[in-house]
Length: 246
Ligand SMILES: [Zn+2]
Image (tube, rainbow, N blue to C red; front, side, top):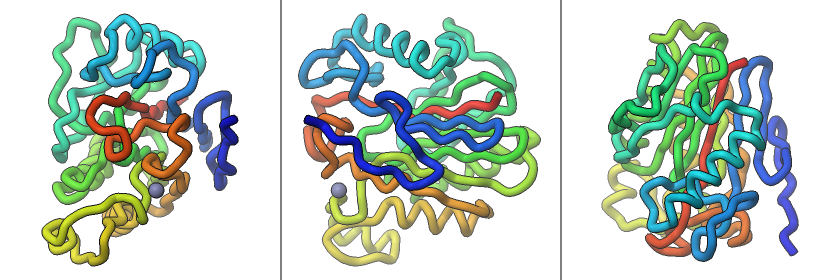
């Protein structure tokens, strides 16, 4: 029996997913629950480039959009490459558009839903008056400055005022084992790398006023709650972080 962990404010459970609503900004982090995919992708696999049956993945997107009350056709995403670029969205996504190689989505358009996929990397929502972004940040993205590009994107899109960042479920500080070369890169030490701590520091240094971390680790949480690349290997699904303005 899966028990849902207690979430710190401003996060709460909304059905199977994690939710946070701050004024006109809406953030959701999905779990594995609520989809139709079979093992090892059970059940809400949103990874379009996994070995899962594509029909199941598409059904999962339809279910998710219905669950969250967002328009399926207005979900914007890219083809993630562990890079440092966030796509600026002035316009609605079009189903025939090629997906841009990028690691985040930012917009000022109401109702346009920014989505990234993760399975240990961090989904990070960035919110300020008039703009919103959702960023995919693993160690390569953090090192390359993807969060800083997300912060720049908000301003370029006309976003104003203080920025609030929300870090969703991802590799926790005690679980993400790395070698000495990564510690050298980040100026850290120990058997594990604290991706969330690094992200929070870079967000604050980059000008974010507030950082909230949901405090859930994809690697050591109940395996029925999140997909984890580290725990399950390459044959696993992806959860999503979504953010939009209303
Ligand atoms: Zn953990």
